[in-house]
Image 1: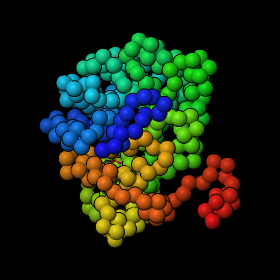
Image 2: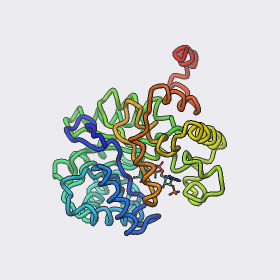
Image 3: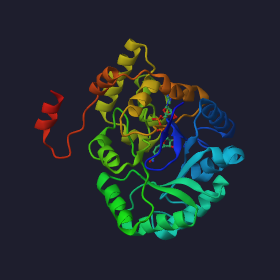
Length: 324
Ligand SMILES: NC(=O)c1ccc[n+]([C@@H]2O[C@H](COP(=O)([O-])OP(=O)(O)OC[C@H]3O[C@@H](n4cnc5c(N)ncnc54)[C@H](OP(=O)(O)O)[C@@H]3O)[C@@H](O)[C@H]2O)c1
């Protein structure tokens, strides 16, 4: 497993990040521990988490697994989602960010969070307030690097500009959704990240399992048991792309999950895709992404199986001309 520098920080992270969303949910504690051990054996030092994953259980399990060698790890967590019925226990207000960080530190059994993401954009809280809150938790030594997830390019750029203006700790990482059937990030988000030297750790590189091909048969998983994922990937064209993609992989002797992750990794803006799994068998296919020989030709062939998102300016003519 290679390592890469994260954004403009001096820290090196493994070229794959492991997402712990299944810990304490689809994966019980022994299964979570087995996946964690497999990741460490493969050379992963980078683990993604969130306070809302399985109501805090994911952070608790990760904390127990990591505590003996905490200094060898780069841990992320997130805040924004509701953590109780209290009207203020959510969002990116200074009040909630501070309280959420304290609660995450307790569950993770650590004195610092390496990377803290604001999980979604908060339409209710001014960006200035959220960035000041991030600055405060950094100054307090509780968080090392601020980050955002699921923010649009303009929201992220605005945040970066505010931080630069005040000389506050800058966003070093973003976490967008990105895979072969979710390519919106290519239009504005990834170029914005490159222009600012911000690290990118995209989630759902295997389209939450769609690109494994299992939904082309009778399999059950998130896409037919979880309403949010059903809605996210429910468009017929995404299934058509998955079908073409899986047939292509079979023809070439490639594993569809490993290759889907390698395709995300190959984008020059990407630091490390965040892989996910519910057991060690699934995880093995994701870890094998680092062994896929992703040549520029293979990358172009896979990209051509999917829909290219329209350009931000709507000037299709130049996009077509650039393709030749
Ligand atoms: N910031 C955010 O808003 C956000 C959102 C989502 C995820 N994330 C992060 O990103 C991480 C990864 O996301 P993700 O789980 O969606 O990533 P993913 O790699 O696209 O999908 C992983 C899922 O694909 C299926 N899968 C994987 N390998 C398979 C195989 N060999 N055969 C059949 N199915 C297979 C499994 O689905 P089943 O479990 O259904 O079997 C597995 O849970 C999460 O753990 C979390 O840390 C962040």
